[in-house]
Image (cartoon, rainbow, N blue to C red; front, side, top):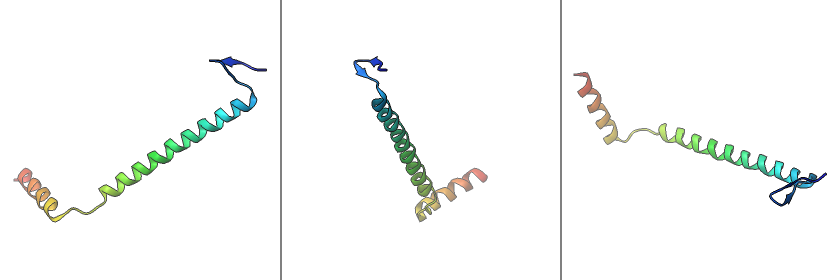
Length: 65
């Protein structure tokens, strides 16, 4: 049985390749997203520089008093 969609025959091997390709694409998107999220979390975990700490401290005291 062969179904034609946009002049591509969708026989069994073609469908199998398309399904495997789709799952690999989803896996790559998931992997890249997890890497980006992990790197963003690492960036947030870095200590502040002394200048940034001083600015944040001044901002806090301005809001408190």
